[in-house]
Length: 252
View 1 (cartoon, rainbow, N blue to C red):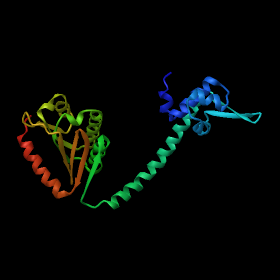
View 2 (view 1 turned 90 degrees about the vertical axis):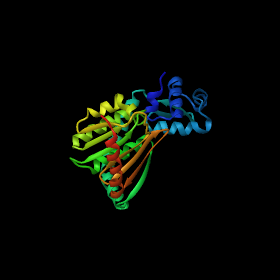
View 3 (view 1 turned 120 degrees about the vertical axis):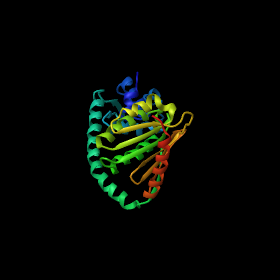
View 4 (view 1 turned 30 degrees about the horizontal axis):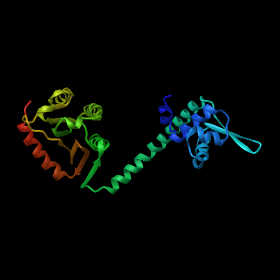
């Protein structure tokens, strides 16, 4: 039996073992349940209590002895709907909270900051900032793009990001490593509001830089994935000079 759906539903391994053991045994006391499930005596009542709170198990007392029983399997669908409803309510609450958190964040961040974002999700967080602070007609530079940023799960995100970028009217200049021309550079060249060039052959730069507005992001997705975001207008202006120089060396 594939138990992954139960795990995705949020049940722990112990809860799954006890729930399935109850299914096999029917109405039972704790002794046979411990033996059948493999869950220790010290934990069996805690697990049964959690299952009961989820509506997946119940008990009755006969002759001063507790007997436990699994709920009808259809209860799993009811439990799923309850979780979905709870997530919907949590989403509404979170949506109300986000503007308040953003105000606090803005009040805490000075006009000149540097932040480090870890992991692939961090790279996405850093990139999303462009869509929040840039407006129609603005321009961003992405300089030194290798194949490595696209390795793993990032490719679908980059595609979706650039769709939202050109819908907002933001221009982008990409400078790729030559070996990343196929298929990544050519794919980027087909995006609206995009211009693509390539560094001389043989140059491979796994770290790339993104320059936009008052911000420079240095990203890397080779080995450890992280990005450094520097918010400083003078620094951004300086890096734009470097970008323009490298761009002039690039070829189509």
